[in-house]
Image (cartoon, rainbow, N blue to C red; front, top):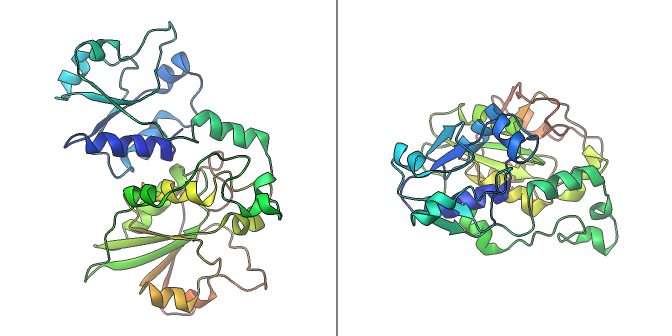
Length: 300
């Protein structure tokens, strides 16, 4: 499973050198050493390629990293988080490169792991959607992640729109950022020669109103980092309104609004959340979003 903790590790690794090559294991290797993967290897290949700090990937990389592997891809060293990784036999997968002094370490992201996210889904807790103080706090009994302005700055592109850019606005929950979201954003990115994609992220309580159950699994701060790490995204509006308003469109000088052909639920007052943008000629562009039903959360 690919999450913002992985993205943060790749960001740190990229800062240590000039060119980042990421080895992605096969389903068979992961199943043997760790357990069944959440996403297929082809999905994981595409998801890792979509992370903006990645220059190249190696599909089917061996689970044990050797000097031969580093030399084959002209790598000076390899990078891993500060948590040890073992084979099914209990061997350190980086022992050989560590002994050769061709190993670097980066800090893992506190408060998130694949095990943690799967646990949230299985627990189906609704504590983070309570109407009391627990519900209003971004630090919930489910997520232990603490957002900082520094972390957002590290993930953000920091680039303003340039003359000639087509400013494209999309909005949604983008919970548990997955291959369907990447397909959608990639398609939106292809609509213009110089796209500048702004993603409007809805607050947790807003998402829960239209997705129900215990959604979103990830809180607004976690979802922000997940989206910012995507190479197709230029900017994120944290806590965007559910209905796309004229003020929002004018403020960001939006040229195009995109939404996949998934069900659009009405706002609290029964109105169409895209009514304003639909009323503008050539403003709304709707296309099929390649969501894999078994892998997606409802809508975006």
